[in-house]
Amino acid sequence: MLKAYQYRLYPKKSQVTVLNQTLEQCRMVYNRVLAIRKDAWELEQKHVGYYETKKLLPEWKQEYPSLKNVHSQVLQDVVTRVDKAYTAFFRRVKLGEEPGHPRFRQFGRYDSLTYTQSGFELDGQRLILSKIGDIPIVTHRTFEGESKTCTIRRSRTGKWFASITVKTDTPLPTNIQKPSVGVDLGIVNFITFSTGETVPNPRFFKTDESALARAQRRLSKQVKGTVKRRRSVRIVSRIHERIANRRNDFAHKISRQLVDNYGLIAVEDLNIKEMVQDRIYSKSIHDVAWNALLQMTQSKAEEAGCCVVLIDPHYTSQTCSSCGHVDKDNRKTQAKFVCLKCGHSENADVNAAKNILGLGLQSVASTLSTVLA
Ligand SMILES: [Zn+2]
Image (tube, rainbow, N blue to C red; front, side):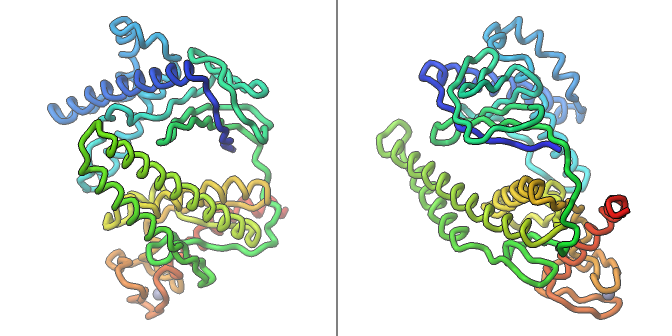
């Protein structure tokens, strides 16, 4: 099992310059790889894959010597990122959707880089990064286990963070005597439990989202290079940061309740849900908050000795939780689910949460029986 640790970095001025230059090199490579794959797809309907594009890196290093200043794993990770974007793109094409093509990154819009295996080392209050330097770091808690990857991220307000993933031995779920729960991620309510309880959307979802939209509108009207525009950029960044703080507080609170009260938590796999969901809602504060909730629940679950199971959400809203009848036309468009076979009717989100719980119990049944034996 992988666990991620976040740390704040305090690079010196000269190190900030190197970090920004490195991100810029990564952005250039990202856009070049994307261009090659995009042309191949649009001109010849051809796939150019990960390995074919990775093979180009040595050539490019000859052509652009500045690329030699970037750690080779960091560059390979850029190729991986383009590949991930394409995998998601083609998956949606296959499903018959018309997804937007992966996009080129504008200047200043590429803000993280990853060492995928080595080239980084945590040494007391310094993070030693190959090709970048020894950066002062604040580590409030250290980790045990083998570090796997290290991602350096620049926030919109220019702060720097390191996220280190660590491999730990997975403890077996010990709290299996606690009740199990299914969790549905919804739009009307933030989440709905299989017990029928709900956690409503917090007020700040709406108020902050409209504050952000207002600030962004104001920003878009301003002329580049003016003092007014710079001020507006700062305001937008500050709202983003405020949303992130509130969202994290909220996710911390809910995830704490979940792991304290339940031994098995079954929840939809968001990577799949994103593809399944009717795309009425744009990527919003909701999606990010769900992601934060899942991540926090998973990391707390480990310590609390409970088990989080991710469920494929494909039919959870179209299946009757009472008789198991699946009706693909029974899409969750109404607040109430009505089974066309047995007549069972129930709040649609509660019905989905019960199905999620059922699938969760099924998938751990074998594991649990070994634990109990
Ligand atoms: Zn039924």
